[in-house]
Length: 144
Image 1 (cartoon, rainbow, N blue to C red):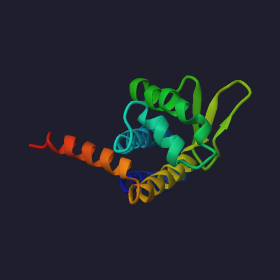
Image 2 (cartoon, rainbow, N blue to C red):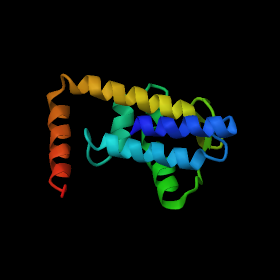
Image 3 (spheres, one colour):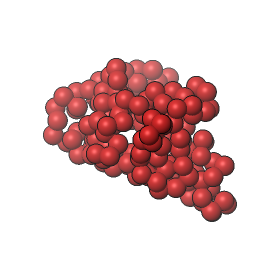
């Protein structure tokens, strides 16, 4: 999943030089990847819990905002109303107005780091192992 997103990012950079005019497509793919991956270890507030437990520390204070401000707004409305994405490697920041922003490349690196950390924790955390296995088994039952 992350490799496919990386391919899209690289293709956009080759054509445009950066992610301008491809940002929403990449952002939606990143949010869907985060949603799917986080569901293997967490239920309920799975995105917030995944970000809080596995993302780099600069994203952790915004764990709850990422689901509401980014995932929901992008996936359901194709727009951001209280947040922004930037086409580069800009760090996650919260403006004085309260608007959250980050660069798509920065978020992609944070997502990859979060997945790496999750997989490392999965090696020894019996609770995460059980949740991941249960999620996999549930999904496998739907296969035709």
